[in-house]
Image (cartoon, rainbow, N blue to C red; front, side, top):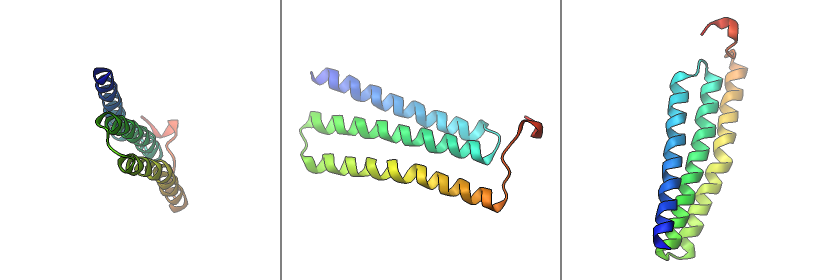
Length: 108
């Protein structure tokens, strides 16, 4: 049972690392501010949720109390609520400031 939990934690951590890496690649490769902010906010939120799931499983396998579970769940809830809202607010501020979205006629 412990081996299965350890493998599941490793898989969750590897998936979180993968999505963090794709967020970094998206930030480097996408052409304008809006697509870069989308790549960063969506993938980072997903990767942090995978990391939190791995932490919850590890807390459960180590037999830690509900205090640790509550801290991880509060952290996950805060990030899940604030991350996309902050990305939307930043994109809205950029749009109101006059930053134009990229179009195909702007070039590659």
